[in-house]
Length: 343
Ligand SMILES: Nc1ncnc2c1ncn2[C@@H]1O[C@H](COP(=O)(O)OP(=O)(O)OP(=O)(O)O)[C@@H](O)[C@H]1O
Ligand SMILES: [Mg+2]
Image 1 (cartoon, rainbow, N blue to C red):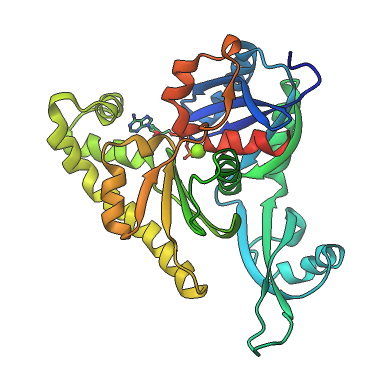
Image 2 (image 1 turned 180 degrees about the vertical axis):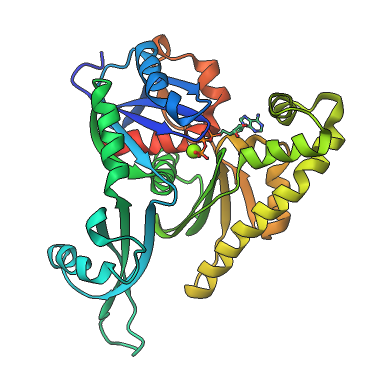
């Protein structure tokens, strides 16, 4: 039925869990035609885990879009004089030096015009534009591509986690029109090692940052406070049973630290641009912490909701465990955003 349609797998190699989502596009429909995820205890277990995942998932395509993240990825929003994309690509090599803490020959550069910067003199044309500059250590991209080739996969693009989340959100919006007409939204994806923040204005990323706080910090706090081992702490975090009050007490300071960090990003954005973040959307495995929405809503003083990155997508039920997919839906923003890029 779906023969001839375009398919791609979004492979999100997360700090704790590797997720793979295959999306097939059939005209206006986006269909999840395969899905799987696997927990990885450490980095060295990744190649085997990815191999296992692809063996199990019976994807129809070998085309894979993956992402990088972390401290070897630099994202900057800079002002430059107006020019076309070709000139920008040339000019950026000379400009990038100022913004990137690595040797320019060690990085892969990418740049893209975002918006016109309004001319301070009223009535005059814009002379400057806002440009998104992304620099990734070449070694990181090469290692990732090599890993996928070795497994027999075909990497078609390598993106960055924060932007994949933005892409998943935009897809979600386009599939559920009228869902929300807020102009500026803050996307916050709380994973295991890190939290990604991406502020979109009319669908364009205007601010992106990673904060190195996440689910592992929640688990560690439970370990310390309750005197349990990591395994028990992870279990209690997901289901506190009769220790709810203690778990909550352990988590509160970390939630507050993380919330304050995210708030700082919203403040920074709002001070720099004449705009207000209207609504915050949470995703990532750690957004499943009970009552996080409410607590963040108070901290941010903004309407805050968990959103479901697979809402609006169809599911091909004969190759997808629908219960497993729905249970982990919040973890799939990056995977969905990646796959959607290539279909
Ligand atoms: N029900 C739950 N309640 C609380 N936390 C949960 C729950 N389920 C999963 N988590 C946590 O979510 C995290 C995994 O989420 P996710 O898959 O989004 O992270 P990741 O992509 O592997 O990590 P990162 O983005 O930091 O690289 C883990 O820390 C896990 O403990
Ligand atoms: Mg992640």
